[in-house]
Image (cartoon, rainbow, N blue to C red; front, side, top):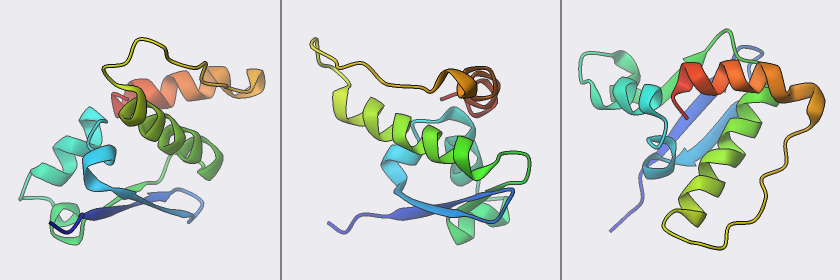
Amino acid sequence: MEKEYVRLISGDGFVFILEKEIACLSGTIRAILNEGIFSEAQKNECTFPDIRATLLEKVCEYLHYNYRYKNQLDIPKFDIPPEMVLELLVTAEYLEA
């Protein structure tokens, strides 16, 4: 079975390509992609004009981390630079990540 990929586009134009299964760990991304009424669902792409690339990249890293370590007991620490914590918290809340 071939994997399906999605494109996440930051407000500053950077594109991140993830497996759809991993991207859909975010409730917001899942809702956008699974609702057939959005053009994003047909194109398998989500644009986030208010999210900078540095934040979206960290969200993508976290989604991969979450996917890799789900249902495991011994989970390594996920590093977040202190200067990014507040903005990342707001972004994660919006994306339901």
